[in-house]
Image (cartoon, rainbow over all chains, first blue to last red; front, side):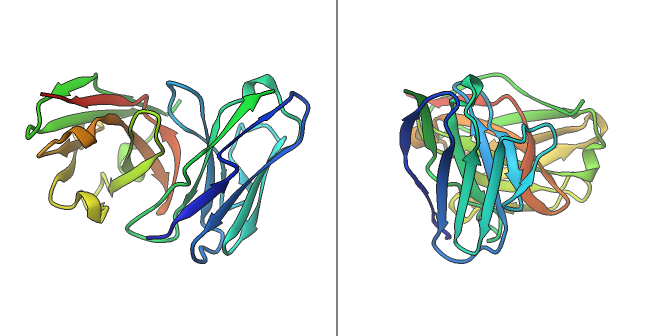
Length: 108
Length: 119
């Protein structure tokens, strides 16, 4: 199975900050990578797919980049509603689509 | 608007089975695959498998092979996930999620169903 490793696992930031979360795949996955945001007690929400394509309705302060094994999610100007847990997911390797362990973004 | 509405919480004993439903609305049910993803409390996300509502074809993660069955009733636009031989480690929130055009990322999710396995 392809292992997805996110870093950091958690960190604190302030509104207005620019933040970057990293996701590394244990083998190449081309651009078959999605990012999700999850708030407590809620289902995950799709932010980005194909590594860099913004899902409809997602604010443009979210962006994704990367291909192969290394990927990043960037939030350009943190808003209060962005404090949540973020997951990456590879959908390259059937039949096991794996998620990263999550990155919890907290208010400083 | 697209919605996936799941059945309510369940409490089961070890060794029992559970069947969770996922009712779709706001789109053509047979045009998108339905996936199931689970999340133990405080843990990450784990993909379990997919089902094509048009053909009924399924694919399961190896971990769940032999214990999970995904089915559908197209007349009521509802997908089902049944997990058997439950153990305490199966205690989790189970989500259904729609995937797009054979690309297995998930654009719409159900609200989740908590399944608790306890003696």
